[in-house]
Image 1: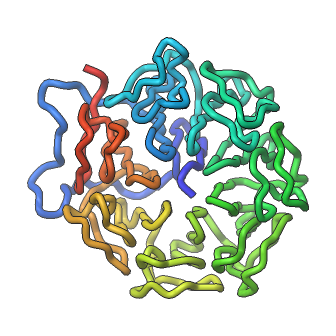
Image 2: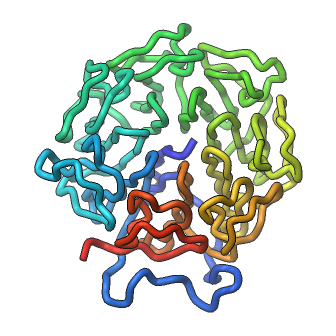
Length: 381
């Protein structure tokens, strides 16, 4: 959905690497990008960002930074933070090479293994606990090169093999059952990339797209609307990027965007709100990166972010709250994108820009005001 973490060369991106010719453009209707405050520093040298329900994590110079909701200590700031929300990026002091943010929990890769913090309802922290929490970063012992989490489950790739943990509804863990697990399980499936959606998953193995989990809204793209409890090959080859949304899926194959599943706000970019039960092209080509969230989707096309779907809270970064059923050019060039329930993040030259809902301060603007254009986030004052 919106928490995949991929290590590519020396840059860690939450949504894959867009190797386009980056060119600078400003948001539509604006002369320059919005700067949150002239007197506050931005979070520079960021190499990755990942957002959960109402909070975000980032890697800056090898350290985890966090912002937003902290009621379950999911920001990784420790018990001394008293679970207080943070309105600007705050240094956790915890070193890591990658992060992934779930609903109320966080993962990080530290010294080659997954560490977690926050609340585990179904075992999604991988610590052998259920309906419990941890206030400090804790080692799961699971080795990982790549991580992706969503609502209450997650995937890790270690040595090419996919491991899963957490809620098992609809068979989304890929273990042949709907059982939940509080420790990491070997799926027996190898992949190069994997992404966790709300109740399904999508992966790339040697260019072929594989799917697993909930198929009730056509999100597995096989026309059957049937759940799958083991990783199953799709008809798509030559894939370079995938994204599992709330109840839909996206893939980039030969630069073309293919979509399937739920599209209540037009987030599939097909020009309508019709559900798709089979993989279908939405007509977007020349795309290097795709990200989807609950009711919105984003692509990088020729180095620039385009958006489609629900526009509430300004999450499409188009300067309005209007929804769109086809992809619209935001006019904002970026190196990477990351989508979440509350909005979108763009990483550009090591700086993080945001748009969307800001009810817990998750946009890192030192306030709780929503914004509808990409806005430069700030460090703690």
